[in-house]
Amino acid sequence: MIDLRSDTLTRPTDAMREAMARAEVGDDVYGEDPTVAALEERVAAMFGHEAALFTPTGSMANVLAVASLVAPGEEVLCESSAHIARAELGAHGAITGLTMRTWTGPRGQVDLTAIDAMHAPDMGPFFVRTAAVSVENTHNFAGGAVLPVDDLRALRAWADDTGTRVHLDGARIWNGHVATGTPFADYGRIADVLAVCLSKGLGAPVGSLMVGSADAIAEARVRRKRMGGGMRQVGVLAAAGAYALDHHVERLADDHAHARLLGEAVGVDPAGVDTNIVVVERPDAAAFVAGAAEEGVRIAAVGPRTVRLVTHLDVTRGDAERAAVVLSRLAAR
Image 1 (cartoon, rainbow, N blue to C red):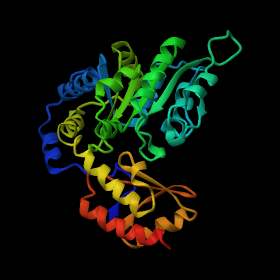
Image 2 (image 1 turned 90 degrees about the vertical axis):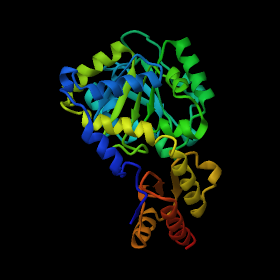
Image 3 (image 1 turned 135 degrees about the vertical axis):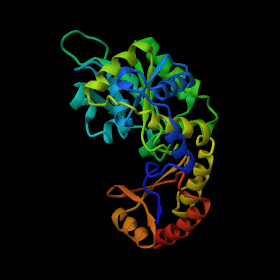
Image 4 (image 1 turned 120 degrees about the vertical axis):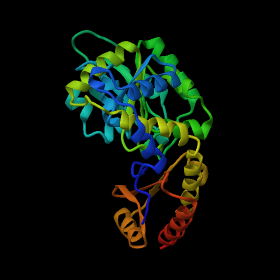
């Protein structure tokens, strides 16, 4: 089977497994795992922030990051198909007590006019206050769309003027960097806190990081433990993430090329495929998925009329070409 359901399906390479086996470890709850500490320091520096915190999942990293900005009863604004709104099972409200309002932007883009209109300043003990805006780059459900860095800079300037904080869900920020050449530090300057993921396109088996100020990370470390996220000799996993940063970032360009090939096969303009995700509108999403599976290609329905294809480390050029033949034939029916 050629599996295009998600870039979370990758398996550690032999070399990554060797790096994991050699990792020096300690008890990270005591702050004594040197491999975790090195990874946290490295990722914080990449984005120009003071500190970072290793977490088992991207959802936890996002919950911790947003909670560092938004108190119970305050709100975060985000795009209506954002991962924090649609794909984290309501964790932000359920766990931290914040509220959320959304705008709808084409391809998940920043709509500063809508954000400004929605923004609610502190008006005393009667109204919910807007504490933060969250943006997602690249945007998953918008087909891996890249948010232009100039739009993000405009959001940062607006946030500074209004006293609002900014959270960046950068689960696939690596793809945005490779697609545009935007330095990681430029993305880091946009956000007060951000979350990045190692277990999607980079191919690590587990792991994300929250990145921010030293104070925000210290608070998040306590909250992580309270949520059951304290980990012991977790350097074996951090080593996989470090290996991925060393070897799997620039190769994301291959995934992007494969995605454009698949997009063209199913009738999507390749110019609209920014990174490694292709979203296809089909009146028969479930039947389209089933038909592809019968011919050896796994894809995912992400709505009754929406199908998603995701390229990744375990999909070769040959795999993409074979999948393109199958999907093109199905799309033409």
